[in-house]
Image 1: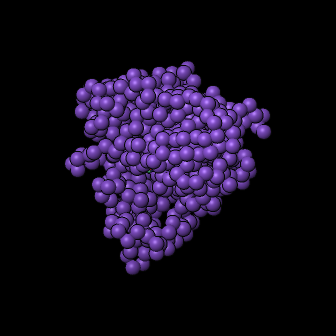
Image 2 (image 1 turned 45 degrees about the vertical axis):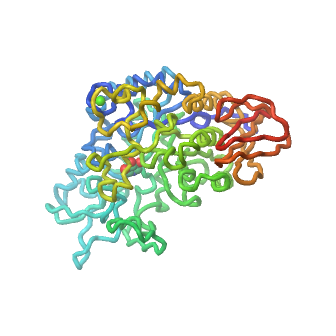
Image 3 (image 1 turned 90 degrees about the vertical axis):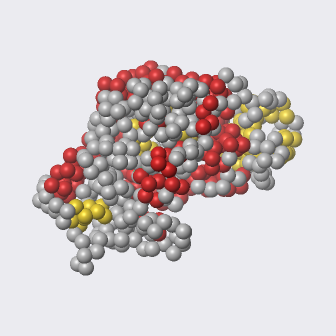
Length: 529
Ligand code: NOJ
Ligand code: CA
């Protein structure tokens, strides 16, 4: 049994804010840091422990902030460093931690480093990025594709060479094999640590090192034949452009910085298969604290597939490694649209009762669905390049605070349209409803925080047939049983013990159960045994 005190990032729950779409405070239709400050009471009241804020740095916004032109500043749209400092102190006063986004794979092409690097072949910063000549036959330096479509190379006319960009051509990849780049990017971490941030979410961290020889990737024979013509990236096996063995040395360096600062968390965005992914925890608890686990989003939402994913994860992790789960973020279709509105309460209970740190995405606590974006209002470069169905705008529509014309997000037309459902699906309306999904999230968050079994206990699945996924969470002082019905039909479960229902997704039962537990369609319950 665990006697040591759990670090905050194991015990707590992370809430992701997409700052453009959370709260506008100065009537320009774009969310900002002051807007976040105004909503800190909401977040504290919701019961989350940390907020991760997507990039707010100076940026030409080719990829809405994931193209950074200055790692140590704040875009004037979002505020300034003084506003950021105020955000940190106001958050800390409320017991909320601040996690910032760190984008180490690429800068903006407007970053002074790239401007210098591009200026001439012998510029001292030339080697800060990855420049190559065309192959002798005039073709691109290798066959890699950009995640956003087209080749990963763009020719720079002034110097006649190509530079590598695994995302937009406005996002040139940094050369982490250059010690000065390594140093400069570690200085960025130090800058924010000194400003008092509690951790980092690290963008595509497994891509920062590429094969030293930049060899061609093999083609993937299993690639979906219906990919758009320009989706070169989607047709390859990513053997050489990412997940190189020597990246782990950099991960250990990052962890060392975190350990020296104390009490901070390193979270990484990683999409690799389980056996490759798990290595980012380190061999000996010496790399990332939480390599993001996206696998619950990647499969059908059924009892057996979800259980299999959880069990695979639990079996894979070394004893000291802490699991984590994600059901939505700013890159994926909305949870409610993916699994259907009827299942969203069940998803909330799943995410907040599993063993491991949950990350919630803003608006999922309201059951927000994909926004409907008219073609002429598509903003996302991925949607513009690879087709409207790949547009990430759908999950980036403004947060819905109340029933006023722009949902309380702004007083003017926002950068993306407010979703149609906002008149009823907003914080003010759901707050007033004791049975709403928002009330359920609050109750789950309260319960998780108060319950040693839920935030720290062990996990053991029960062998229940479809459509029920049930598991025991056990700590020294208490034992909980969670039973989740993944179907639109009633289900029943026979238990070996009796228990008291402490929470139902439907927020209408609190009773002692005999050995037989009946669950309504998509109902989940937490029992205290
Ligand atoms: C992952 C981020 O989550 C996504 O929004 C971004 O477009 C890419 N990385 C490139 O930075
Ligand atoms: Ca604003």
